[in-house]
Image 1 (cartoon, one colour):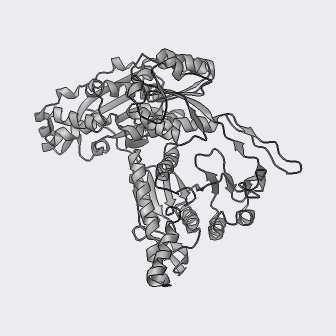
Image 2 (cartoon, helix red, strand yellow):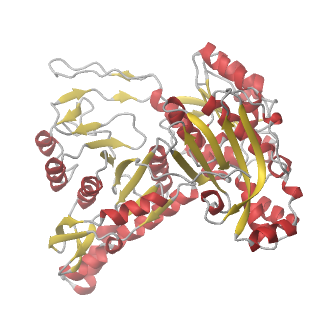
Length: 586
């Protein structure tokens, strides 16, 4: 067995995102916020997410405290902060559901301290090393805004809008390349856009101008700290392609984009398709959903219309086809036709992309359309995104990974003494394994994924049926016990090496790995891929690779990328406005 590389410590871009009560209004909003965090994770950023309590919760807590004990600031601060602690934990849970490695830290765990009035303090200290250590092991760290420790008072809060201050302070102390304040508006306007539809938005502002223009939108102390530490601030809405940038910049206005509403044809409503449908239905401002293609429409009771006719599912001027039916060949022609006709295609079906890679990409080029398939490899782990970045520069020479969450789940259960049939039944019960598990168990699924990775990473066509593979059915109890006796674990490891002659050597094998190895630590349905770049650095991508929500989140992220890139109109500037229209990149 070849020795697999250990990931090298390498700096990653860090972004601080702030989510206030204007976007966290109800419990259901945590899923949308998690998708916004995931958008940045898949772009290769580490994320610190600073959150407020749900809308109205802090006021309710303060009012409750006043009713019970009157005006006692030191104790009221302890009551008020519980909303933020609760909110941070809930967002970390929502991120975990879609496969993002996330954790949360309370103020005392990261040395976050402040000075001043118990209910209106100013941040002064942060244990940056503790925070960065957590980010070495996680892609997102969720922290409560509005609250901190205090050397005298113990616990304090940061006043109205304190979460803005927390976000800027974290960005300054962690040397983040930006802090993005997510609001219920897509930037800073010269007037309230809800009251005046002709209000003009600032594309960029200096700190001094932002302090005047953003009154009531951004906490003044946050802007002061940003100016002192030269922190770049972005003010944007959820999922927005645009923002107002605040830094040492001249004032520039731009007219906001009128975001396109795209028509979507959803083919399939199984485990993944149903999750994608849920996301689409939550954004009626952005998407119109056709009848959904299913095999048995009469048995459905969801709040949409179904059909078993592909033609009916594709009715109208469809902008995006989302394919989750599965199978390597049945819908290949339909996807090629859509791409050739200029319709974008998003799929999580690794079999169809691997089997028809050249044809699908040729049709996409002919129709000037996009073919996106991030969910086809890794589920919620943004493997293909990382491969795409690294393949351009400096290039990729090796891949090693655990890319089938179902097999990983089964192997873990077998190591705990379960029989194969018991483990498989549990995986099917939890939605990790299909009714016919052959593709997972016999290594075909991993081979499809490895074929795609090799093509995107190394530019080499390697059909999945040419990749040697082991079946999980060949694993014996004796092999499992032998591995455990040596402190090792069995994993299904997919590997590829770019050889000096330009060919690729690849395999999908059941291998015994030392317990200390990064791939040995991958548990249950997690996926992890080690990408060795041409300069010798090793990059690790990690996330959940099976189940509805991780894969659906990846598919929806592709859909949102297309929505943000869709051609949009800007309203004509009003006479004498001085507005500078900005060109959108499509």
